[in-house]
Image 1 (cartoon, rainbow, N blue to C red):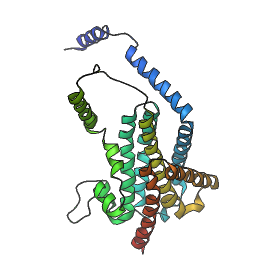
Image 2 (cartoon, rainbow, N blue to C red; image 1 turned 180 degrees about the vertical axis):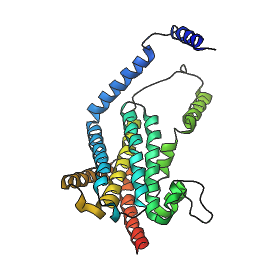
Image 3 (cartoon, one colour; image 1 turned 90 degrees about the horizontal axis):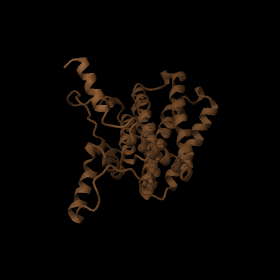
Image 4 (cartoon, rainbow, N blue to C red; image 1 turned 135 degrees about the vertical axis):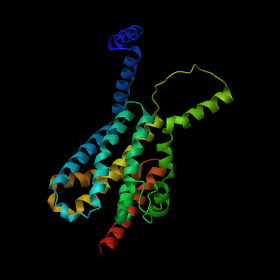
Length: 282
C-alpha cells in the first residue's frame, strides 16, 4: 500500500463521521460544565490547589540557587522524584475537576508512589538506588512499597493504595463490579459510555489530592528548605509555612476519618526521618 492509497482510505474513513465530532463536542461540554460546577460548589479546592501547585513549582526552581553542598548525596534523587511527578499531580487535579475521577486517581498513584520512595530514601539513605532500579547486587536492600509502608512507616495506608489501584490494570475492578451487577439484576439499561457528576467520588479525589499536596509540602519544608533556610526568599518561606498549615488543617479536619488519621501519622513519619538521617550522618 502506497501513500496515495492510504490518503484515499483516510478520506473514506472520515466521510463516515461529522466534523467536528458530535460525541467529542459533548464531552468537552461536560468537562466545562463539571469544571464550572466544581468551581462554584468547591471553589476553595480549586483555588487552594492552584496556589499550592504554583508554590511547588517555585520551590523546585528555587532549589537551583540553594547551597547544594549542604545536601547529602541521597537528596538529589528525592528532588528529582518530586519534580518529575508534578506533571501527574497537575494532570490528576485537572482530570478530577473535569469529571474524570478514575483517571485522576490513576495519575495520583504515581505521585503517591513518589512520596513513599522519598520516605524510603530518608529511611535507608545508603540504599537509595533501590527505588530507581529493580536489579541490584546481591545483598542490597530491595524496595517493596507495601512492605515498607507496613513494616517501616508503620501506618495503615492500605486504603490509599487500594483506592489508587482500583482503576488501573485495565479498570478490571470496575468491570468486575458491573459484571456482578449484571449477573444479579440482569441488564436494566443499555451498555454505553457514560459521564456523570458524582459528588461523593469527587470528594474522594479531592481528599487524595490534598493528601498528596500536603505530603509534598512537608517534604520540601522538612528535607529541602530547613537545612538551607537562609538561602531562600523570606516571602517564599512564609508562603510555604502558611500553605503547609492550611493543607495540614484540611487533612486533619476532613470528615473522612481515614484521611484525617493520616495527619498524625505523617508527623510521626517525619520524626522518624529526622532520627534516621541524624543517625546516618553521625
